[in-house]
Length: 157
Ligand SMILES: [Zn+2]
Image (cartoon, rainbow, N blue to C red; front, side):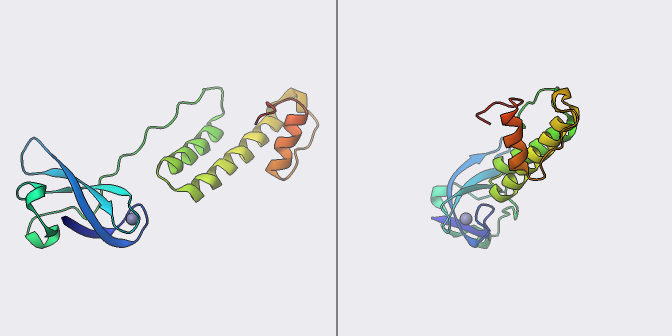
């Protein structure tokens, strides 16, 4: 088994990442190597220039004199498409929340989804003519409940 030692991008522990498989680039020198963290058992991909087949290598790949990236290859996930009817401010916050969720930043995603609800419900209160003269509740949960009771938003929200 060959490995590298890096700060795992999945669990933030500096751990041994065991090499599982390799995808060679067309140049025959550079590759992308699929690793599994021994601390959290989750995967990540790093660039590298191993000499030979992965099955023929063993030990710490960084000790072989060949180059292996210090940073993983990170793919930025595609953002969900939202209706143009949604105001830009609410769309931007929701996109941040969705990005955090796709990057497994769950606490950050939760905070941004909460902010999305906060901003979106305030926008509804400020623009919906049925709510003219009504004051929105301070707490987002109460505001959502009020919008539900007034049948402005669906009950299942
Ligand atoms: Zn890990």
